[in-house]
Length: 26
Image (tube, rainbow, N blue to C red; front, side, top):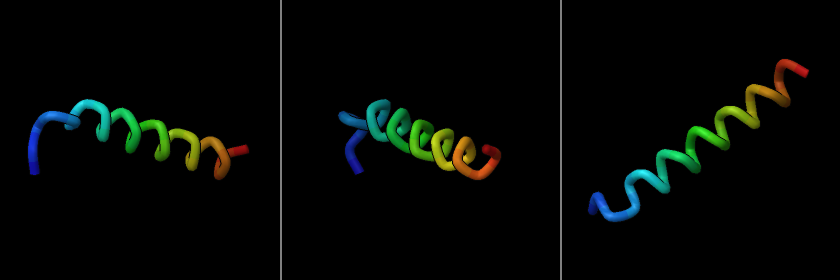
């Protein structure tokens, strides 16, 4: 696993998790 797109993947995962939680709590 290269650390080139590490921050981008982390941002994507965080965004996906946040949107999923928003859907759950709405």
